[in-house]
Image 1 (cartoon, rainbow, N blue to C red):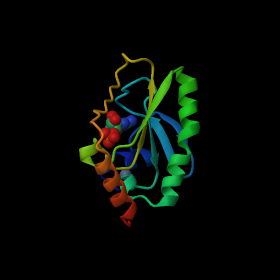
Image 2 (cartoon, rainbow, N blue to C red):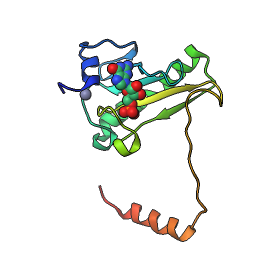
Image 3 (cartoon, rainbow, N blue to C red):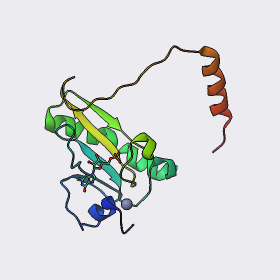
Image 4 (cartoon, rainbow, N blue to C red):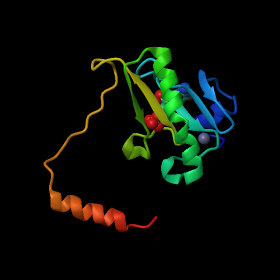
Length: 138
Ligand code: 5GP
Ligand code: ZN
């Protein structure tokens, strides 16, 4: 895709600090470095996000995550890692070429803040929503 920043990185048109590459995938340091070692793993072939991927290309992308995560952990000395994938604007996606964030964590006071606000469980609603999802064909 000509106006896609990550395609330009894949094509070598703009530089990136690469940490891993194979035939289908590229990983490079995120320019924002929310924490040191913050890395993006992308498929080389342009696809908007995971919602548009087929199972084979998704498998190729996600099967590389554990080794890459361990590599980054070992190299940085991080204590943990958040592995995040944003799909569509409402979910925080700003670059519309599929990517997985690997963000090493160094302590509760590092610069990555994630919060899940929890609600009182309504077990009837949970059951009917689960049933609806189960019955939905894609
Ligand atoms: P999203 O918000 O779409 O999940 O994440 C996109 C990420 O791409 C952001 O964290 C942003 O810092 C990173 N990014 C945007 N442009 C560039 C770039 O030109 N080079 C690199 N290395 N990262 C970029
Ligand atoms: Zn692209």
